Image (cartoon, rainbow, N blue to C red):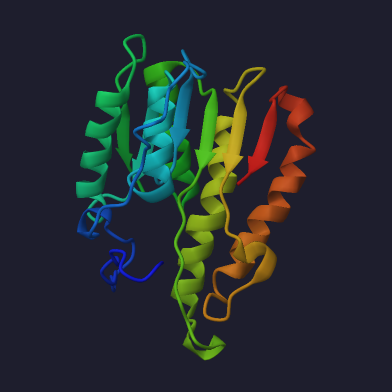
Length: 226
């Protein structure tokens, strides 16, 4: 940043998941210059971890493009951000889109993933787009600082949820549907203090390549890694 320009104040939060409403200034989730063109008109889209960050931006833009959006969040920890995001996408939604829905859930467990998919199917009848976005990361300076609870939490959120959400959603997708998995640049280059995150990011990347081979079974357009 050039000398004399405004500097962002330091951003530090000591708990997971992070709270977007505590950030100053708030992150930008959309551009005032963006011109929607109804590319997702009539689509039903599910975004995990949609309350903040990448998830909020995706929810907003999908809504602007005409999709009906359902997103998940962690109850008791992300309620404020989830409420804010729900209001954002209600304002962004097009006239023909159905009302958006926010589902509180811990997606690290198979039965919860099944419940989310069942709730979406019961309410909307199908899933056209699934964005597996929910994830956590913890900085650790050495392997000795990583305990089994932390390791399990990362894999349950970053890997188990992707697998089980896809497992149950794939039964309901039609030809032309998409499943989008988000991962981290650390899957390719690593990072010294994110040793607990890198294996999960790499597992997501390699798992995604394996899933792509199964696209023909369900006539999906794509399973994409972002």
